[in-house]
Length: 105
Image 1 (cartoon, rainbow, N blue to C red):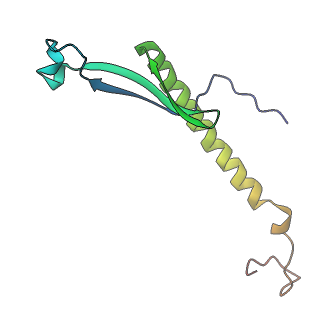
Image 2 (cartoon, rainbow, N blue to C red; image 1 turned 180 degrees about the horizontal axis):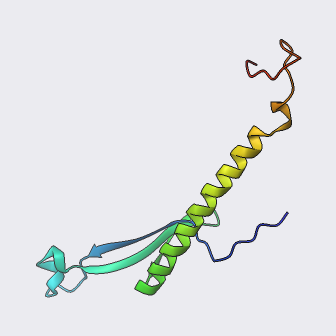
């Protein structure tokens, strides 16, 4: 069985933050609305929680890939639920009611 994905996906979270820089005379120290925007991706790489700095174009691309990942994960969850509903043990009777499907066990 092969699963074909039409576009790149990415697990994790992409977010933007507003931060102060290290320059004491910068506008960002006086007015919170003028703080610098930074973009980051956060997720697991090799079992370790990791974050990466992004530029705006990378941030926007990550957001699209993450949305596709979430959609694929949701679809896969639905497929698994359907498979469990159709599992072989769902159609056999139980020891109390061998002539019909029973979920009391």
